[in-house]
Every structure is written in C-alpha cells, then in structure tokens.
Amino acid sequence: MTSRSSKATARTSTEARPVARTQTLIKGAGGIGTVRRTTLPGGLRIVTETLPSVRSATFGIWAHVGSRDETPALNGATHYLEHLLFKGTTRRSALDISSAIDAVGGEMNAFTAKEYTCYYARVLDSDLPLAIDVVCDMLTGSLIREEDVDVERGAILEEIAMTEDDPGDCVHDLFAHTMFGDTPLGRPVLGTVDTVNALTADRIRRFYKKHYDPTHLVVACAGNVDHNKVVRLVRAAFEKAGALTRTDATPIAPREGHRSLRTAGRVELIGRKTEQAHVVLGMPGLARTDERRWALGVLNTALGGGMSSRLFQEVREKRGLAYSVYSYTSGFADCGLFGVYAGCRPSQVHDVLKICRDELDQVAEHGLPDEEIDRAIGQLKGSTVLGLEDTGALMNRIGKSELCWGEQMSVDEMLTRIGMVTPDDVRAVARDVLGRRPSLSVIGPLKDKQASRLHDTVA
Image (tube, rainbow, N blue to C red; front, side, top):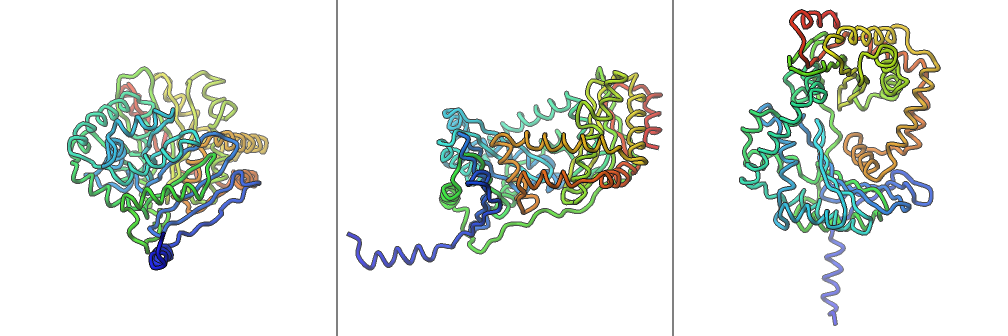
C-alpha cells in the first residue's frame, strides 16, 4: 500500500515536470490529415500527420545542419556524421541498428543536404515504437569511435568516386561552384578527398555536439499514428539519453543565411573523356521564402518540367539533340538557383545551348501564352498531390516545413496557392529570373576550339 506521504511526493514530482505545448496546425476531416505539433520543454519539436487509412508509418528526425554550416576545413563533416550515426550507440551495435529494422521488413536511411540532414525509418504502424526507439537512440547516443571513423572514411571516399564517375550528377555540383564559388553553398555536400581524409573523430564529435542539440532538431512522423503516443515515446527516448535536461530551451528559428551568389556570366568546364557533354545553363533563382516561388514553380514546369514542356519539345522532340533535358529550381534560405540541364553528344553541345538560351531569352522578353501557363498549373497541381501519396513523402513535407519555414501548409492550401498564380505573375517572374545573365557549367570531352566558344553562350 502506498503511504499518504509517498502519494504527495509522487504528485509533487508530476506537477513539477515541465509541460509540453501542443497545437493543432492543420485540422483534417475526421482526424484524417490532421497535423499537430508538440514542443517539449527541452526545445524539441514533434510534428505528426495522422492517416488512419494506411498501415504504415514513417518516422524521421530532421537536424538543422547541412554542408552550408561547414568551414572549408570541415567540408564533408555533416555527411560524414550522417554515416557515423549508423555505426553504433551505447545501446546498439551497427548490426543491431540495421537488423532491428530489417527484422520487421522496414527500411531505414538518411540524407544530407546543404541546409539540413534527415534520418528516417519506414515501418508497419505496429512497429512504430521500435522505429522511434532506434532512430532516437542513433541521434542521441552515437559513439563516434575512432575505429568507425577510419572504416567509414573508406566508404565515403568510394561514394565521392562514384559521384565523380557520374558526370550527369557531378555537373550539378560544378554548377553550384560556378554560381557560389568557394563558399559553403558552392562546396560539395560529400566534401572532397582531401577534406574527408583530414577529418578526425574529435572534430566530428565536436560538430555533433554543437549541431545535434534538441533545439536544432525536428521530429516528424506520418501515417497511421497517434500524436500523443508518438510524443510520449520520443520524450521517453530523449529523456532516457539525458538529452532534455534544459527545461527553458526554445527551438532554433528557421535559417536566414547570407547571400553568397557570385557574378553572373561565369563559365566552368571540366574536360573528361565521356560519351556525352553534360551542361547546366542557369542563373540566380529565388529564396524558398520568396512569395514569387509559386509563380516560378509554374514557369519551371512550363519550361522544362515534362514531356510537353518547351525545352523538351524543342531540344528532344523536334531535333533529337538530347535524350535528357529539363529545368529545375533550388531554393535556399536567402537565395536560389534556376538551371537547365542537358546531356548531348559533344559535337551538338553548342546547338543545344543556343536553343536553350534562345528559349530562356524568348520567355524572359515575351512571357508564356496563357494556354501553356494553364497546362503547367494543372501539371504542377497533379504532381504535387501524386508526390504525397506515401507516408515517407508526407513525413518529408511536415518535417522540412517545420524546420525551414516554422509553419505547416495543407495540401489544399498548396493547391490553392498554385491555382492563384496568374499569367502576369509568371511573366513577371520570368523577366526577373530569366532576364539575368546566365552562367554555364560543362563536363565533357570538348576540344579547345569548342571550349573557347562556350563563353559566347553567356555573353
């Protein structure tokens, strides 16, 4: 039997426990699609989206750190750390981590970007407690041992080599360098052979402790989940690891950053014996918080977002000059990129670039006709919804939204914003973005005479 004094002690202990703050951010019909956020006293944010109609759940933890946060000497540290968190904790070996998720038929992975990192596991809804325990353990209890750093160094060097062997991938890193130069946004996420070889376990541990504080993390979970249960499990896991000791901590604000674009009209060429020449022609785009991003999304779709797009029709369908040609946008906290990629025979590179440049200039000066804009709006709406048809995509959406914007937007709100874009909006953003002088990045076996003519493309 519990004594009266022990009851009073228990009650006092419970009452003294810091209270979490919970908000309903998006109220779905009948609870379906409802997004809720709880902020724990230690500054850890937990967002969930409930979908009772599915039998799976994806659990992820987003860290407010990317390659943009690295000094030149630390280039590649964020990605290196991503690898190391899978190598073992105080409770689990590397095999324990992977076998726990494999044993229930789940999948587990992570990715590093320029401004954030994400670790996630997708499992059956009944196995969600296991996924939460494993991923939280990785984020809070990683050992980062010297021997693991040495072993993983070899794997990362092989990953860098694999990227170098794929010029269609490598050219995008080159374009980032062309636009941003030797700045954090211009350096490769993987780092270089020299920087990876120079990183030590001690430096990576310090980087880990600095950037993996709960105030820098967002927990995101989507699927057949109960928000309160997710909060209880996550809180228990972080408290068990001693990671929520600061009861007065508040979450870090969304990143602001500092503009670091270089002068336009730059050309960078890497000579390589490849069958194709891989090119990216582009210019500064928009920051991810710029309200014109919706119009830019429509413009990007119309220009190079599908088989009916202008660039695809002009370069591939009408002339057969390239198999792969598309446009894309990348938005960061304070700036962005707009680029056009094409892979073609080296002898055709100048023809392809001329067509692309002519199309960009034409749209910048005269805009797009209403029918092309209407088609692009419909395509963008459809692809937005179809891209959110699994719990992994939903987890990505709510996690990234919380980390990068500090707010959530329902799918219906997103579709409304896309539908509100007018032809005048698209034409205005086309003038602002496409009217700028472009820069160019090329990887391929171009001869000296061909290479010297590349500067004419951006003149």
